[in-house]
Image 1 (cartoon, each protein chain N blue to C red):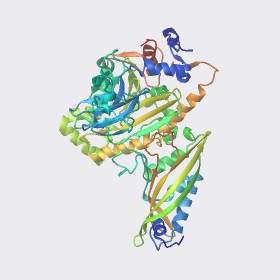
Image 2 (image 1 turned 135 degrees about the horizontal axis):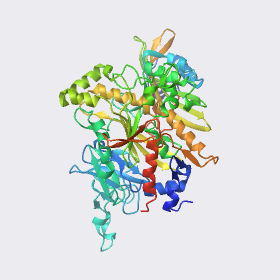
Image 3 (image 1 turned 90 degrees about the vertical axis):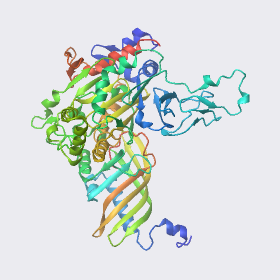
Image 4 (image 1 turned 30 degrees about the vertical axis):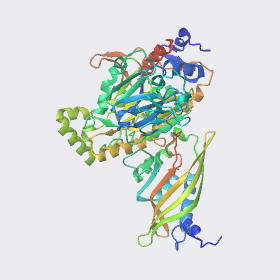
Amino acid sequence: MINGNSDEVARLVEAGRVHRRVYSDPEVFDLEMERIFGRAWLFVGHTSQVPMPGDFITTELGRQPVIMTRHRDGSVHVLLNRCTHRGPKVVNERCGHAARLTCCYHGWTYDTDGRLLNVPVPEGCGEGFDREAFGLARAPRVGEYRGFVFASLAPKGSSFEDHIGPMKGNIDDLVDRAPDGTLALDVGMHRYIYQGNWKLQVENVLDSYHVPFGHASTVNKEGVQFARREGDQKGAVVVEAEKKQTASSWKDRKSYIVGNGHGWTSNTTLEDGKRSSKAFDEYKQILTNKVGAERARQILTPRLHNSLIYPNMSIMGLNIHVRVIKPLAVDRTEVTIYPVRLVGAPEAMNFGNIRLLNVTHSAASFVQTDDLESFVRAQKGLQSRHTDWVDISRGLGAEEPDRELNATRGLATHEMVVRAQYKAWVGYMREAA
Amino acid sequence: MDAKTSSSVQASGMTGIHREPFEFFLIHEAQLLDERRFRDWMALFAEDGTYWVPAVPNQQSPFNQASLFYDDRELMKTRVDRLEHPWIHVQTPPSRSAHMVSNIIIEQADEATGEYLIGSTFIMVEYRDEQQRVFAGRQHHRLRRDGASFRIVQKRVDLINCDSAFEAIAVPI
């Protein structure tokens, strides 16, 4: 049994393998909710989801329900969604607009910055009742970069800058594609759920090894995946048709780690020079007019495929989206995928991105559904006691420094990124609160 | 109850048009899905036909917002090719389904152009890999007369839980 003893937790992770209990033991999950989701910097939402004063969204950080609001002065607040009186969730909608936040039970009313405004029948409160002390609790630490709002539920720990800093370039890579230099997560979302541990999804976002077989059903007889992006004439070459094996261009893909569990994979090789359509050409022109030809060329030459901001968020640079991973139980996880609207891009370009994401990442998509099947089967297979160990050793020892990127590099079909995630995992898990 | 009372006229939608051919068509379409004859199902769609499952209630457009499905014929073909692929893991074992279509109303009819909008309520029970689940909602078929039958210009499926989180959905609803 796990009692939070740091040596015992650390024993679950070895060089090149992890104990199956990290996926299957409810006590390990309870400890993760306390020690990882209870204090790590977690992605909450994007400021474009609350554009006007009074706008709010609700979500969960680990097990804790939170509200992200826009206050009258324009500030964004991350508040615990729990009435300070008797405990009900104050806001029940997933998103909306309200001048005040009122609890349904006894009518305690809060301002959009969390201050307690009104208590019905106030004469019932004791003499020393301090209204100031009964505001909605706030996430102790909140940080924002280019509209991406993160919060930590612990008052101290690694700073926002130290945690997110190494991944700012990955956020820039996506945001810079918007001609107006900002993006909006205001074009709906995809939500899916699976009967498996949250780390199965986290590990998968940077896993290039699974694509040729895991997504075999999306690859045609010529080894080419369906075209994904607006203006592409065809998709990625995943399998060499002649030899029926993983294409060499796929095997050459790289992955990178920068500490804190974060990482990314290099771009998918596509014929960017031939990328053209009415919407794409118009977009390219608008971007060029804004930032100049050289910078536009850099922005439109994809560098990144997927980026993971550990532990709960990823950004995809190919079929662009932001993904948020929410653990529900040791064997149950919910994922939200937000299509990205590039502000300033032609409508048709954004529409193309939205349509593409239906095909790749909705609950009914061609791509994501086969991943979900793998996660569900992993959770079932890991009930086996044949061995206690899960192998993550591909490329162990083959990592090398990338001085230009200030990162550590490996092949994307290796498992360096997974090992890096478990290094961060042990870091959180062995340290008592 | 007298068939001519106002509520029953309302319930049958457009008067003076036989409902039966539409009902047969919808039952036939449901049967093709239940028999996993996806290629034949796709052939029911017009060349410019679309299959749309919105992701929010009363969704106005498939373009400016995420949808569960929004397939034109080309995407439908990719979807059907995949459903027939031997390595589609999420259909190993395959889904079985039973569709029930009812409460059919002819909501719009233009006999001159041969275009019709048919509303119906459906329940689809799906079983796969030891799990059974239920999808239900209202659907709208925009149909175009084609000889003795119809082609689907758009099938729109509004699930009552369209904005919830779903486990993988591999087959059309």
